[in-house]
Image (tube, rainbow, N blue to C red; front, side, top):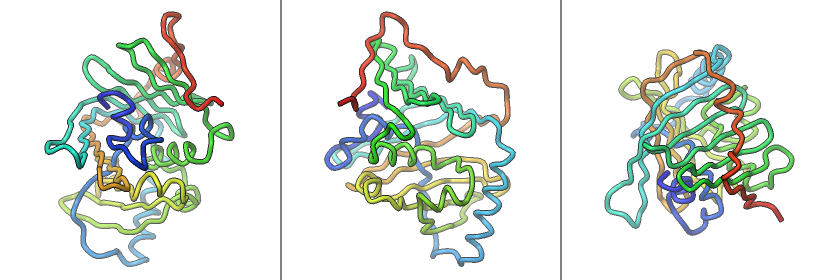
Length: 241
């Protein structure tokens, strides 16, 4: 999140092509016991999806910590995030804001306010397979239903410790697995609210977000998501052929 390229991935090598997208969501890192029984896993998933039906808006502050193998100390940055189902979100990183990731109806915008620069990425059918998989990984924290989740991820473990339920998901798509090994979600045990996310990359690097000051179902101005680049901003399309 220092720059979106470094922030989104936090590591190079085989995940370099997703460097602009990785910063949006990371997953809770907790030591967990053995794999939960199937019946327990089903109960957890059913309760989680039931809680999602009552979610109309979500906003929170977050602290992002990137663990990069080449650095002795992790990189820590703060930010704010907003989400409105099914797929509208806005992430702001830094103070003053250095990077904004904005999911609109048919595109993803990555904005660098200080540089007056915007990168545009198509979504839906216009997005290539690998980038579509990356966006799917980012939206994993708020699944719409069980069918959608299980079509994209395999739930490898569920664990509870210190009032936090940790779900570990592994992407089913081969191209997604080349980017990330797994995703870990930290959820409150009482209401399944999102506490943390962590992306575990294939080279062992990690990127974690810890959420605080969460507010559910407040009114969010639509203008927060419907942003138009000012005339003096340079707009590029990195995936354009």
